[in-house]
Image 1 (tube, helix red, strand yellow):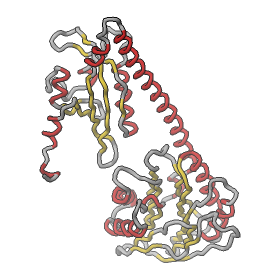
Image 2 (cartoon, helix red, strand yellow):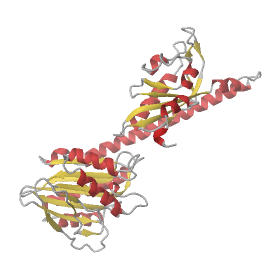
Image 3 (cartoon, one colour):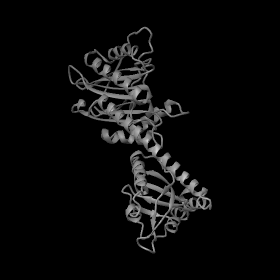
Image 4 (cartoon, one colour):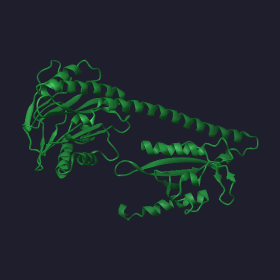
Length: 409
């Protein structure tokens, strides 16, 4: 049987466990037969309604927190795009046949995101397993020992969830710091002036949304020129971001006064020798002259920029490659090369996370990039950047940090 011939709707309805599909607004999009049976409500009374209108908190229990904890879990799934497994929860349910009567019920919920094509969560798979009978069984001993075990189980579950919540809050605070640091260190779009450019920044899966990859676009002194650069610092998180900020700032300053990109990288390479954490850092920089229609470039151990010509020809700028920034014990002059372009061409700089995949030669990734650019060369920079990321990043997200700059010349 092929995947196309499987009736997934029928499979969903026949699942033995209680499963509901929620929209990002926490409205029931669908429920399976087990969910209908387990809750004692008809499908028509559930689908299309807000979750907490269907299952409100027990108003007769001032200590009830089941709805609050479930709401927090669902919002966490929407914001992080990650599955959230909750501890055993007491969540009383109103008896369908008798309004105002509430049954003590216990549940073990798991909330799983369903991403759309753009990576945003479009649905939440809300799976619940009722454990009320287990709780009652453990509490059935006449000497009260079972009830003690029940209370212990419930208390330990609550403590575990509270600990997880504190860990998530600590991670969220660190992420806020990381985002602020990233925003402060990377250049604002206004620095590109009137140029048609698009930039993209994708951290590796599991990172704090900040990494050691960086980009820079700067108006150069003298003539109608800009400098476009990307770089890569080994590692992730705040430490790598700190090194990234130092090297990017140094290259920005050097580019404004250097005679060319090679001299700018030479200055940054000397600086990298005294920066802890800059070991094996790479960078490539290009000086684009719009009056002469030329690009001068130099690379310090970095994947080559791509010049996409209007006729679809792809040129890798790989004739001026040198070791990484701090790799030369005795600094020597770095190589530099020049190429020409016609108005309407596209310059693309990127970090290795875009083209490298495990157990695959990097040339395969470079060819994949060239083909993607060739096919979509008529797109504007913003659209082209999105397409390239969609086609080149591994399914499920980037396994390495990725920076991408697309400039229409």
